[in-house]
Image 1: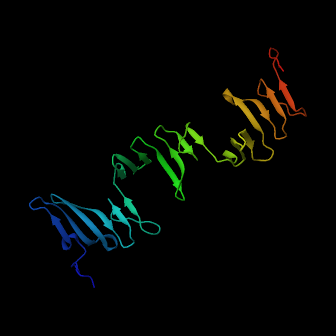
Image 2: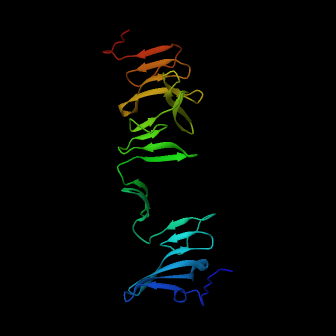
Image 3: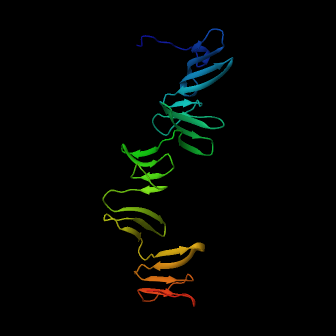
Length: 231
């Protein structure tokens, strides 16, 4: 048995433990009750009482809600009926803010420093204080900086019809590659006008008007009357 055993006569705050500074009518009740007979903390602000935090039998903690619930295991739920709900992690003058205003979720480093993301206890991505994003590097030099090791490194872009790799080989050569059979590499300018195409067969076509040659030549160039081809 426990050294101190307190039993409530009912599941209301009035039968729990109440702490208050003398004469202020501002204090806190601790009682077992509410949802799932949770351990509940109630605030009394000059006679206005409200439950502000609970620990339920599933191990869930709720702040601003009396019914924290998760699919499995324990968790922390911070809730607010309106406006922005925030969780802060602070070290010295630096603060990490997790928040939601009902429409937009936010992860915000409020300090002038980097924001890191990782898996398996290893950093995988970083947003530095200037907004540059680094994948595989802790010092991104451009808005998006992807850094590999000594092996081939690619960025992959695709959809249900196919896709491309943009990258650099282990020897340092730059690469643009389609990874779907029968697909071409096309070069377009303003207005989505095609100017050059490298077909899946390796043939190259260039045209001033966006047309392209699909014949048997390895290189075909289509020019207007006033254009010329210089070799």
